[in-house]
Image (tube, rainbow, N blue to C red; front, top):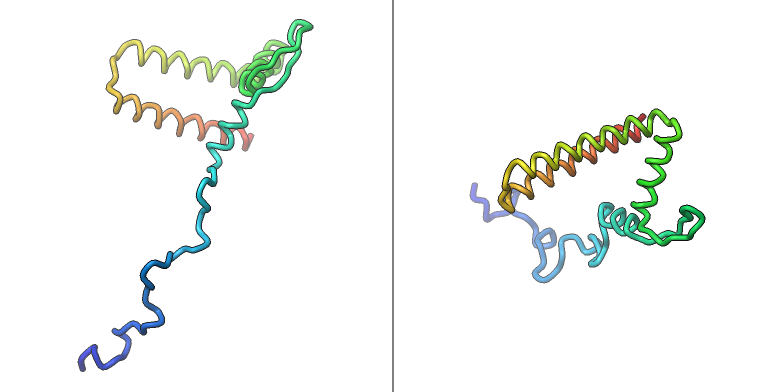
Length: 128
């Protein structure tokens, strides 16, 4: 039997793609931001804090770090342990960069690795 006579081998015209029409018309809208972009924007947004009796305007990320360090200094063991882990990670990254001259491509690979590692660590922290 030949496939030109119909049957299961031939797709009906109604099921074929139409030229100029998207296969996903309700897909992601242009300009939509992913989660990472939204988090970065929020952490860069300014916030007013009071430090030594004076009001200061700092990025939210800086306020979070200040709070984290203060909590660690006030005896919060979990904050202290996390802070020490981050310091160790940052020192390791700095020593690797100081010891080697990386190409732009190598640096991109390292940045990607550390981003994944930090994201995994954050997920683990959220689960704790």
